[in-house]
Length: 70
Image 1 (cartoon, rainbow, N blue to C red):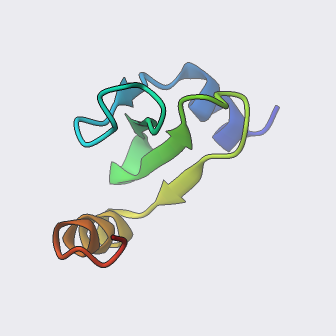
Image 2 (cartoon, rainbow, N blue to C red):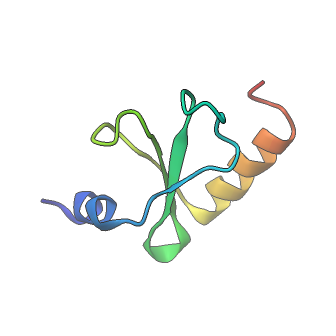
């Protein structure tokens, strides 16, 4: 198992407060080493995860708040 896979396996995942209240559109976020963040679909916990650098995470959150993905 490579280092990233091991880190994702051991990560403390939390459900995003912006996820749907009915549980159908949930994402989970985990803090990783070096300030990185991982995001995954809570319905597919063994599926792929997006990994963001600190700078990418800041830009991603700003885009969400700006409505760029609506």
